[in-house]
Length: 155
Image: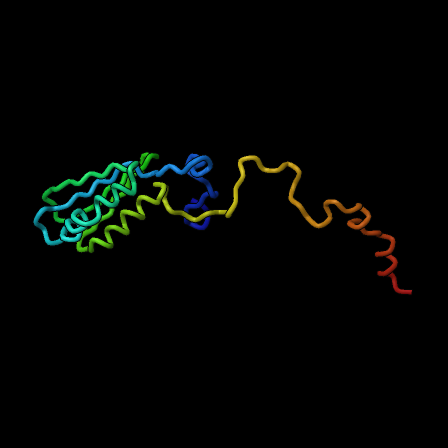
């Protein structure tokens, strides 16, 4: 936490993901629903219509469909970094559930927090920051104090 009260960090990639090839950070999704509850209607429709398409598009993600007696259906997502996120999907349509699962598949598992700077380097420069007088002769950035003093004195 910072002085502002919100968590923040520098911009970073999960294990430099995308430098060589992209690795989906979602490891496992579990869809827990009730076979007969009215709140699980959208989850049951999603299973009938969209589950096979999601599994074909994301072969690296294991998808578990678990029918249980529960009041509130939910989706549990587990990521490679050990993070686990739960989302309740009661009274949502199958399209809303499809969008939610696709959003979970695109995330890294890290918490969404404020980014301090839009850039970050592991090896910062020791030469200092660039400014307009870097490659100029030093006579441009030195004041002549005799001229300054003579201007201050009134004749």
